[in-house]
Image 1 (cartoon, chains in turn brown, green):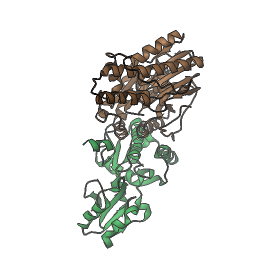
Image 2: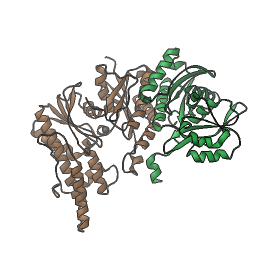
Image 3: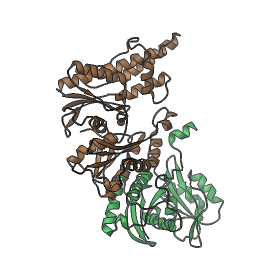
Length: 338
Length: 228
Ligand SMILES: [Zn+2]
C-alpha cells in the first residue's frame, strides 16, 4: 500500500483556533477546535483583538492535541497547511506565522489555503467523488457566495452578497429578537414554533438573473416591523418573526442556487459554511434539487462551522499539484478566490 | 550556548544568533515592510548564512513586548513554531529590557521609551548596578508629561532611548541638563540584545511555557476596557 499523505492544517481566521490532521484528503485523523464563543458572547460579536490574543494562547495546545489524537509525531507530517485569508488579519497572522515556522522547521512544504475553499472542501471530506462541475453555496457569518467549481483547480465566484452575509443577518435579527449570541442556531430553534407565512418580509432578488445577494433590506424590514408593533402597542409573536425571516432568507438562497446550477449545467449542488447547518435551508435546497434532478450534498454539521480538517482537505488537492507557498506568505484579509 | 534572538515588537524586524555572550550574526531592518512577510525568511537566511541548524541551538529568545500588538504576535507565533518543531526551550525577553541594554554601562537612569498609541509611551526605568541591569519601576504605558514629572523626583542624569525619543524630544528636554540622548542606532531595539539576555535567562532561570507564553501587552484589548 502506498504511503499516506498526512497534512497538518491550521485555521485561525476568526474566533476558532483549530488544528487538524487529514490523510489523503479524506481521512480525518484529528480535528481539534478551541472555540472562543464563550469569550465573545458578552460583546455580542467577535472582537478582533481579543480573538487574536486567544489564538496566541491556543495555537500550541491545539496542534499538540491534534498530533496526540492522530497518534503521529511531527516527523510523520508531509505538509503544513494554513488559512491565509480572507478573515480578521490579526487573527490570521497568528496561525499563519506559526504554521510557516512549523513548515520551515520540519523542512516540509507550506500550503496556503483560501478560507472559503476550505468550507467548500468540507464537502469533499465527506464525498470525495462528488460530481463536478458543482455549484456551491457558501453561507456563513462572514460569507454568502455562489461558487462554480469546474474541477479541483478551476473555480469562480458567480455571486456574492452586496451587504450583510446571510449568517450575519441571522445573528443581527436574533439580537433584535433578544436571543443570546451566537444567534443563528437560536433563531432556527425559535422559528420551529412559528409560522413562516405569518409576515411577508421582502425578498431581495436584485436585477433579473442576478446571482448576487442582499440581506440588509430584509434585516431592516424586521427591525421596522418590531419597532412599529411596539409603537402601536401590538403584541409580537417572536416565533412567527423568526420563521418568516428565515423563510425569506432561505427562499432567496435556494432559488438563486438552483438558477446558478441549471444555467451552468452543474452536476451537483454543494452547501457549505456555518449556515449550512440550518435544517430548513438543507431541507428546502434538497427538495429543490430533487425537482431539478440535481443531487445536493451537505457536509456533516460539525464540518460546516470553522475547522481545520476542511483546510487540510483543500490543501491535499493543492499538494497533489505542488501548489506550495513561500515563507514570505502574508495574511490577506480580503483574499479573492481566483 | 547558542541562542537565536528574534524581535518584531516595533518597526524593526531583527534576528540574531548569540554564542556565549558573543554576537555571531544579526540581520536588522528598520524599514516599514510587513513583518509577517519578512521575519521568517530573515531567520531562514540568518541560519543558512551562518550554517547554524535549528537543531544546533540551545534555545530561542523573543522580544515579548510592549510594542505593536500585531508585531508581537507575529514574533511570538514564529518562535513558538520553531521552538515546538525543533524541541527547543524558549524564553520571552521584555522589549524594554532589551532596549535598555543599548545604554550599556551609562552612569544614571535609563529610560527606554517605545511609542504607544493614544499619545503615550511604554516605559520602565533601569539602572546598571554592579554590572547588572536592574529595573526600578514596573513596565507601563504613560503619557510623556507624567513620565517627566516622575523623572523630576530623581536627581540622577536620565538617558532616553527608543522610538519614543524623537516624537517627544521637547518633553524630555524639560529635564534640562539631566536629559541625555544616545546615538541614533541605539534608539532601535536589537535582536542581539534579545539573544544575549535570552542566553542569560536560559542559563539561570527556567524556560517559559511554550503553550502559555503570551506577549506583554500592558493594555487590555479595546472592548475589554469598555465593559470593565
Ligand atoms: Zn468560515
